Each structure stands twice: as C-alpha cells, then as structure tokens.
Image (cartoon, rainbow, N blue to C red):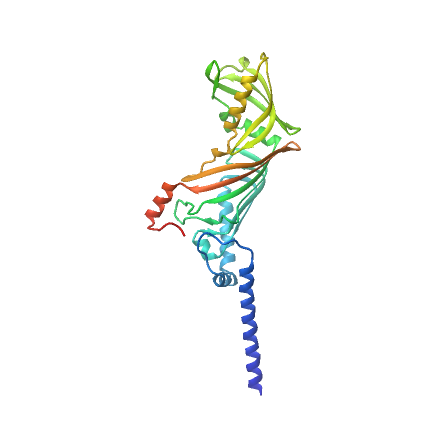
Length: 311
C-alpha cells in the first residue's frame, strides 16, 4: 500500500510539473511578439534559456555594454534597454527591441536636448553582424521623439561646431551672384508658436562692425528631413524690400536644419520629420528614421563571410 501511495504521489508530481512546463510554454508563446523577418529560437528553447538564467544574464551583460557604447556619443542622464528573444539569438546578432532615452543630454558633443527617446519599431527588430565592424543585415526603422528648450538651441548655435556651421555660408543673392556670409552672435526666442532669431549678418571674414543686424521670425514647419520657416517676418537694418532675402532665408534655413546630415559608417540613414511644434518655449520634434546597409557594404560582408543573403 505504501508503494502505491508513493507511486501516485510521484505520478502526480510529474503531471503537475508537466502541466506547469506546458503552461509556461503556452504563456511564452502568447506574449505579444511580432513575427520577426529572420529565424529565431523556438518557444521551448526560449523557455529553457530563461529558466536556466542564460537569457537574463546575457541580457544584463548586453545592456551594460550597450549603455557604455552609446555613452561614447551621448553624455548626460542616459537610459538604455535591450529586449531579447533569447540569449542564443543575442549571440547571433538578433534582438527584439532597443530603447534609449535621456534628459539633459548632449548628442555627439554638439546637440543639447532637454529630453529624447528613440526605439526601433516592433515590426523592425535588430539583426546585426558579429564582425569587428558590425553592419545591419536587415534594415531597421526607428522612431525618435525629442524636446529642445530655448536654452538648448542657443547653446547649440553658440558652440564651436554651431559657429562653424554658420560661418562661410555660400549664398546666391540675385542679381549679385554668389557671396560667402557669416551669421554672428545668433540668439533664439521661442514664443507664440514662432521662432525668432536675431543675429548680425556679415560678409565672410569682414570686421563685425561692418555687419547688418538681422531679425527673422517665422513658424516652424517640417518637410521630409528638414525644418523650414514659413510665414516669415524679416527685418534688416537699411533694407525696405526684403522679399528676395526672405526667399533666401527659407531656402538656406532648410539646408542648415537638415537631419539627413546624420552619418553612419557603411549605412544609409533616411530621416522623415513627422511632427514639429513650439509649446511653452520648447521645440518638440518627432521623426521616423530608417537605417539600412549600403548594398556594396552588405555584399562585401556576405562575400567575406561566405554567407547567403540573410533570411
């Protein structure tokens, strides 16, 4: 009788354990996850790697490395998060989602932001090579949200890189032809859904005393990768008719404030600004960013690693 009792107890334990495992697998499969455009570990493998601690430990290590690497380009209060399929997928260069956010940060020692958030879209997971010079094996689409205060913009314009951008600008002024101009001592005011810029406009390398005080006011509008000024109001000391110059300002402002200046080695980056708004002396921006490997770089990588196109 005692043996029968032990047998029933053991059988019940095995059945309960089996039900728990099956339930866990079913739960793991039911978690919302878009089907990735590449092969990943199946539900059972993901479950085993989670239970064994392989995935949690790998994720912890990867997040520390990610924060260190991103910290080379972003300084300030930075937060990063890498969401995995499994540890084995991570070591294969695959991950579900990357998220980065921060407050009072400086991008590339140049662009100050009061707040930013960037993450890849769920239908566009990460697949990157494991080489010394990583390259994306599948295109990736990200969404970026950013907030710049009035002080942030003034800090950007008066920085060393900002001054270089506003120096020796090549401008075609009809009917006088091409000129090289400097924008000196710019300052920005954000109010009433308008941006107002005051500066001194001067010929390149001329004494500042020979420059003309300029005041530009307009509404910020977005078109593809550029920010434009519309509904312009322009004041230049000594000028009555400024219509031609207003058209020039509209043209060159869009060329300077162009987010497609972003460069990533061996990749193409396309930026589309989807929202721009001035509110409470802050500039709010939202953009979609598509990053894809250059065809020649991807072909070279695949040839050197004897790989067929990623599947």
